Image (spheres, rainbow, N blue to C red):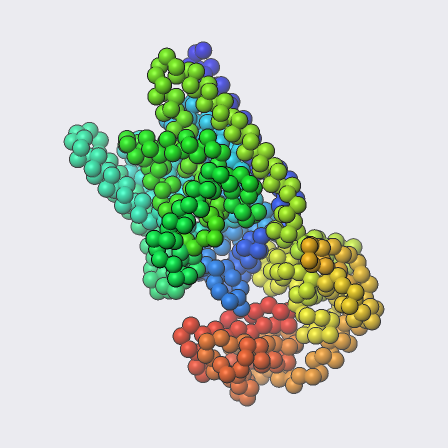
Length: 612
């Protein structure tokens, strides 16, 4: 076979494998999993709010809503702007939910293929092996359906590593600066990437030792310095922001710390080490969202070859050493988190590096058997990897149709949102009211119904039709629990059921009613008459968009005055002060706000207003 024919065959095979990877990532993308994961919904909500309010790029926004009992982590506004751009391009609904994960997963696939090409220098066995495993990995495929920021961050990290290897091969300061900048950009994403903070310094130290040992020839140290400079340039603004807001930088760390429950660091680390060993050897993550709980995150053969590749990398300089260092940093960071069991999602950033390491390990194993047996060994290893890829693909396809995903991924909430959309298209506009008994999380329903260009909630919340906190001007679509005792009030108001569904074990599901506008307005006015009306006057600090019932909650020590007369303070229980406000601007004077205290205002729609 001539060299030109060999290149054509290699290119065609590579293209076929990547096409398979793209096809698997797009297969039944609207239907599977059945609905959004809550963090996706919260991400869309935060992204839409950040875009609408013009939040500064160098800043952060809490993923959890303001009235949550804790902050999962603070998402950088730069990442939220990227999500907002994807959201606008997709057009909202389930398309936006999927796009913020599937789009980055395609970037990750192509970036990891570029990493494999740089790590293998185009040698067929490791390059094709890596691309086959990257395309079919159930770990990457399942995470790519809902992993949003983690997948985006992983894609940037693999591109940074590919650029770093290219810089090392060519002694290019330009590629090194690009690699450093991309690595710095990854720090603006999912917090797991912070485990890579030591990497530029480790590379710098390794380059210094290499140049000192070599003595002559091209020098790597200036290249590593350029990479460090690029990393510092991109991470500096984020570092300055977190220096001014250390509580935001440490929010995720405090939540996940392995010692937060009082355990000693040694016992926590040993417990986690055993859990993660099981994750890779005998079983998967028990969390159904993270993949098949009955299968390791990587096939056993792939894990073994990855260990061989890492061992070879630690023994010799080269691409495998860098990949082993990155995978090691990401995995060690996971050991520092509190875990009841190993978390496949939290370690997913290590997946592409482990897979490429396994391909390099396969090549080293084939070569270790000697020239006489190398062809046979390569064929045998290729067969093992092909079987592993097929089994991994089958595992992912089984995961897609698992009945447990309906509850795990907001299937009932998506069906409710779809029913609302269908009803609005069929019978015309209406306000949407959601009772907490009808859905486990209102943010999922709201994210599916809200348009990308709006930060205003698409739904309202109320415990029942007897507590309408604003007067509707049109028909009302009311979603409530599908129980007989809760159907009497809607029927008494002349409502008709238009859809039902969402039943889960132990949960009755929901029913969607259409309530005539006149009867809904009468009921709302009757409820609001029980509260004194506070008119708007003058210029102030709180803008009220519509007349309705507003709830003021405080946590941590707040004394304030509303319109010069109504006082609420930390002595009141949360939600104790409810006021009927007229549209316009109201003066809200905060007299005392203790450190860390929170004042939140919930509007008639049941969502917390932006901070005044």
